[in-house]
Length: 395
Image (cartoon, rainbow, N blue to C red; front, top):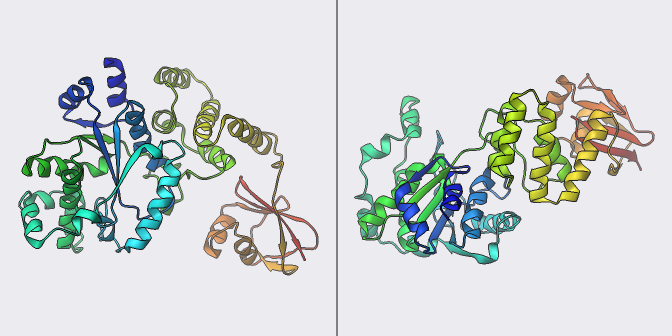
């Protein structure tokens, strides 16, 4: 029992507040109410989002009650955490549509049928102004301004809006409404999570414990994983894409990825760590990592097939077994138009950047001129980077 609790609290975690309290609760055998608050401001999840979901699943498998709290009220305001400017306001309809997609994606690894789903507009929209004043008395302006992102804004002479101070108060009040025993979140959420403890105490409720998980760096090995930086591995991406992106991560984050994105036993991860220190080729360990990730989100069969595809393309310099064929409306294309029209690139600016870096090929030949004209007389192979292929033919 103690070893199971230790694993629950140690693997892939940063802080447990207050650890002694939480250990005591877990040892008592009580089924805890474990909260995860989500403002569904985006619809597509990546492995960075799933770090906390994996930890939540461990608690679910241990028999505890999972509270999914969707911020259809707070999400309209926006969490200022880690932002140097205020977030744009989302509509309630947008948030609820995103929440449906969120549940669908986390359901790949979490049993969402056995999750209690809540919407915080239910109680936050009912608060009176007097209720808000009572909440505001739990914190000082000085406490708020000590937060790093506000200090940065002050230095840069950027505005700080009063409603942003109210965000952690609302998140904390969510824990009052749900009577949560434990709340999970990333390290960037620590202030908001601790606000729940403060506000619960103020309302005469036993203070929740807090467990934080690390922020997963992206495939660039530097910045937080995110779509805007194009350094992400998407939850719903194909096994082939997952494999290729995993193989692109820097060697020094391999072990972190094993711990935070896979279910592999720590003993086996430690063996990989020792092997790398002893001179093992990182490529071989990344292959094992990629297969673990794909097995989790697809299947073992998909992982094996993705490995074969990777070997064929990158080691044997071959092509994928299956390449989509698209019909084009005309024969002659400017290279910028061709690669955007076929959706191989999202913009002409992306095509230009890829051409400068040697990442655009037509029939195996690198394109170096952004003004080049491509004549599609017969089936032509287009390639972006090392993983995107498309055959095209004109009608």
